[in-house]
Amino acid sequence: MQNNINIKNKRARFEYELLDKYTAGIVLAGTEIKSIREGRASISESFCEFNDKDELFVINMQIDEYSHASHFNHKPKAERKLLLNRGELKKLSKEVKTSGLTIVPLNLFINERGLAKMQVSLAKGKKLYDKRDSIKDRDNKRNLDRVKKNFNN
Image (cartoon, rainbow, N blue to C red; front, side):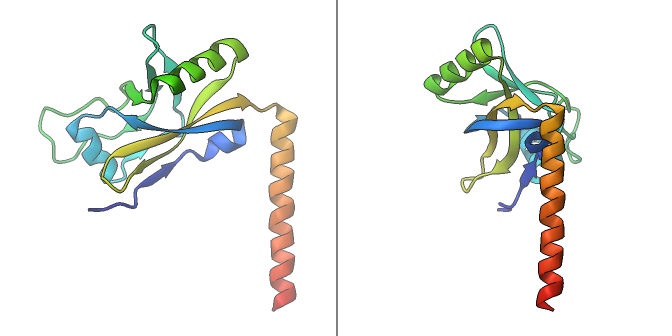
């Protein structure tokens, strides 16, 4: 079984300051998991919300339609339920309601048992100057690595 599916949300680390990380299961239909195993999913614009029953859902996650399916295919941008322990859900719900934090998906992967899992994080939005600092640090690191490489050769 192909086990190297790892779909990342690269914008999350730039847009948010990540606080706590959790690994959650996802409720999927048959064609959705087959499409994920083909690597045809995107979580770059997605976010997580609680509904009125305190269940966590991932919103705006794109899973392309499965190519070999008939008319029983799934909707590409449907809301999908995330599975966490009750204590983790209560903690996340409390943090979101009181502190104004948000929950963002970091990556979507297939575990060793063949199940789709999503790593989500409790996050706080960065200000514009924080983003500038991130860009500056990244550029400085790149220049330093370039100088080290040229010095060693």
